[in-house]
Image 1: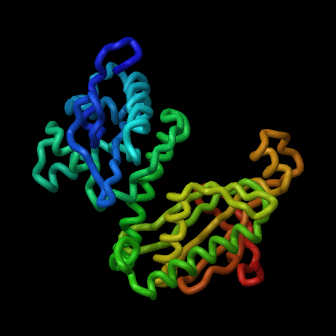
Image 2: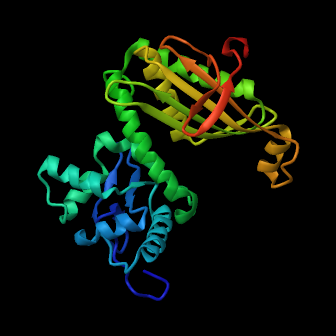
Image 3: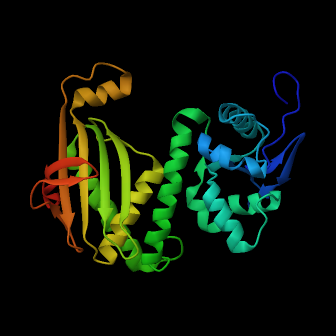
Length: 305
């Protein structure tokens, strides 16, 4: 129910689960008996307008839709053990329905799209974040990340999503170690990593925003960390050329400011670049430019503990 007592219609296109007193499509129950709620979110006004023909929501506009969806998420958190969300992308949905011979206007088609196994990497756990603030942009990035993960997984013959064997696991750890050494050498600060690996079928790209405090504690979204390690893994496993740039504000004062909201003086802007011919990552041979960011050759990763 809404605050004014009017029964609110569950956006059938975007919700899969069971909720007390509210009509839904189906219930998802994990093998351990845990109930899960899955929702797809139309993250932009353009997507909302494009999806009107499928009657995914009774909301008159996107702002109202987001407000009602936020209420639905809050209610789901009170009723379900797990609440997860993903971006509901109209073009992806249309292609999915065409591939499987489904009618996009049917609620069953929307349910199948939401829980389609190959798209599970696009799901994020919802823990009460502001939907229209940080969470909706994260859903957009999660879709992009998911598409890149599928590409990387194909290059590794399913090694990321299935039992990839000892070799793939070892290379994945090598990629994670490369990223760790980049961060350790950078020190405290707020950074963004941009990564590009030239691969068959198109360039693999990843980006991650990182906050690193003076004591070495690192804050990074799990989905971004997974993507960075997967792209590094694919590049090393298939010996593909790549370029990485780490840029941002370096210094303890910046880290303290990010933690406590204090002043951010005492830091300096910096940008480092590394390149790989396929086997190893080393400082770039000279200044580079990646996604509009100019960077100088980075520090040797082998000298970082």
